[in-house]
Length: 259
Image (tube, rainbow, N blue to C red; front, side):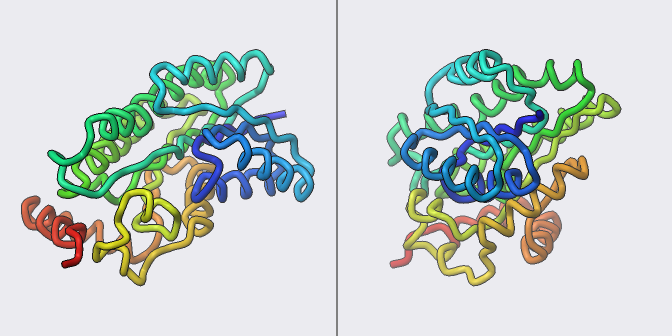
């Protein structure tokens, strides 16, 4: 039986991705820090969809945690055919005021663990000539992001990394999709301290379920890029027509705290 691995599966887009995959009959390996929440999700999905759900509690901010995760997957002899690198986080505020530990962990989760998990799981997919990888970036990937400097930079990495890898793997049977949601109605807004910014008042926010549905369809179709939501697609097209400095200033004004 094929297995779908989902990181950041305890809430938001990752949780909704897990629900879709379970509904489609995939065995799941769910990764997140909150074991209690993972157990709740396991009980829900197994009872509702009759699939087997395996839990791998792990903190992706820990260096080389990807090696431990893959060791567990191999120990359980899981046949991984789908990898959803969804885990990620950000903070809103001036870069010089942010504790380095926040930025370090963000780079570890958003870039390093994502890349390492992909690198470690890719060989078995290539050997079978079958696999789907979905890396969750953001519309933040398309421009600089004052007030969320490192977050935007990490998502730009995910976008470029995914698109390049997709081209390298063309014809192998393994595809890479980069999912770029815009502002989404999840707990990310409060965790990132965006509640008091203009971004938090945007009426065009999609739900996590809508984003996950877009991501699933694009991943299974083997598309290299999926921007979730018509409004977000239009906005990203328009930013290409603006000078980079102008686009950055717009983001800065949106993400500054309301006075």
